[in-house]
View 1 (spheres, helix red, strand yellow):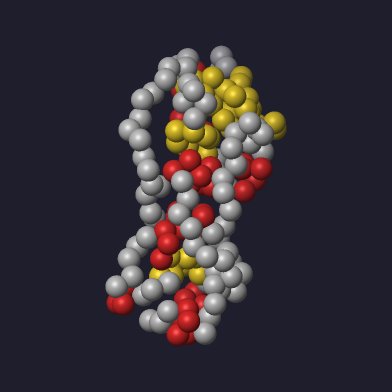
View 2: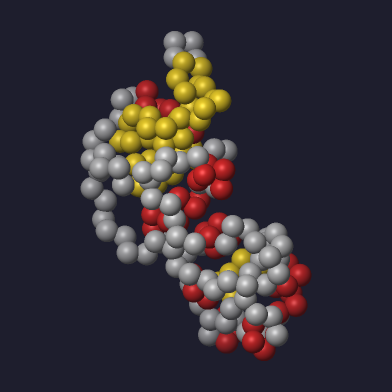
Length: 168
């Protein structure tokens, strides 16, 4: 399912919503389309609009300041673009750099995407103990970066230049 980026009235990224939810917000005049999918249209009996890729709310929404993006397994896979941190192949699991049994936590800086084979081979050891160096170090994305990364590579490349691109 395609995700649509929602911007606040001040053009700050707020969240991502489903395509259907984005269309409802536009039809209710709660949002305007800032960028549409070039080849997709949403048609109904009395409506024909381009499928929104980026929408902007008409009213400013005050949100509490969020210093950190919430950690999740899906977020780690998205952050690492579904590539194994040990070999670079397609990742399907999340590995703890410092294993949980050794005091490692579920944090952005202690987890990396991993293929099942490397996760099993590393087992209950640190990368140094297993002789498996990381190809890239884990990092903590900002909340805005995590939201933009969640859109996916093809949608991220199609965003307008004025919208800040995520780090790494």
